Length: 543
Image (cartoon, rainbow, N blue to C red; front, top):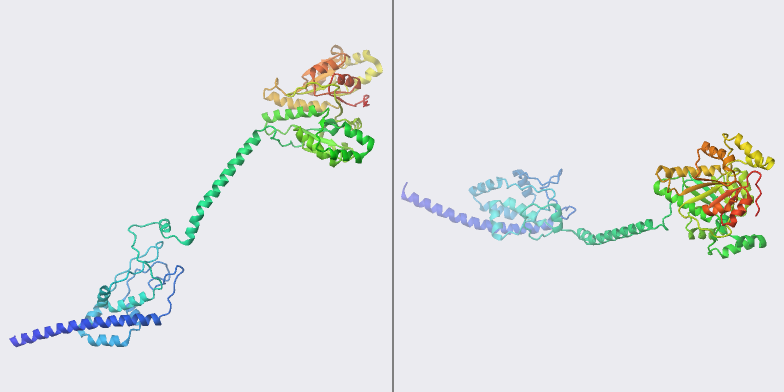
């Protein structure tokens, strides 16, 4: 090759270098101008992009069928379709193509054909994608040289962003949702967090209230005067019906009723309804029954075979307030009342399943006896007597009380000698039952409950037989009859016609049942509370 050709080739290479540098400089200026015009024109012509519920722009890189971003690299056709939809100005494109050489156009096609780097997948529970950082002018121009069409699409995408985000550095390690929630909490979270101390305070106050009421409940249960057990069911209980005049002393009210009439009597009771009535003849007996119930509940917490006291009276309902106040004052566990308003309460005795009826009215007692209900007329002692508070003591006469009155008839008609011969002849024949035999059976059934717990010596019930019979001549038949009935009597006292008053003073029973008014009056003089049983030939009661 000649020197002239070498020189000519060097000139051509130098010229091509100069032309290439000038072309690059011109292309850079045109791309910057076209980029500015494209961004302004696209911002004016493009409609508002769609945003999701969190305010971020819904982009084309998200799949329609899933929420995860697409990790697939865009193809050449997609890149060309996106760049064609940008509507670049014709002047800039024509000037760019006209100023470039064929070799440069081939290099640009190779650069545009190269796929862009894939976008890393985004986790589902992570925060929204971090907005792109602001690039410098030199970095922007260098990317334009590498891939002008992709860069033009990026300019249009950046112009569609509606929100400006502050630069946020990606976390160095993965954090859970709860940790990120405390860092980037919403207004709702801040409101919930502000209410947490208030909720904790309310919970603490509720716990304090529960602890307070639990202590009050414990104190209430430990206080004997405040504990009020539930009454037993009537079908299992031993029902004792007591009249108001037998339970309380109502002599003054009775006198007003007899002298001035019913209206004055009711007015008197309403005026004095807050005045507590004084105890009557059956008061100590009722208190002793309650003590037996308390002992039974200690041994048998779910026991239903208990005494149930019913206040049975013909008083008007208006008088009931004074009776209730008096019952509560003395701590009597009487929950069932029957106020008949002037009518006889005898018709309600069977409805209340009454086992024993005690009243101060002998006529009502006689009506109850005729109805087949064990009844007795109560009499108070002439003087005060000390009674046992820890043991129920009940004394019975034999004939016409526990037993029938057949022996009474023989004595009245044929005398004592014939009576003794009759008893010796029929010693092994049990006597017929009397009106109080059922009540003695009830007492014996409760006694066996204490015996089963080895409480025979500490049993709160004690029964007595106080009879005018002679033990040698007629006592054997009585004891054999009780044995035949399956009943036990704690003490049997045969007096052979002697007065009963001194013996009853020693016993100090809460109630003594007898059919003879002679023995009743004698016992009253010694202060014994008695109950007359009008049965058989001794039905009349002297008031």
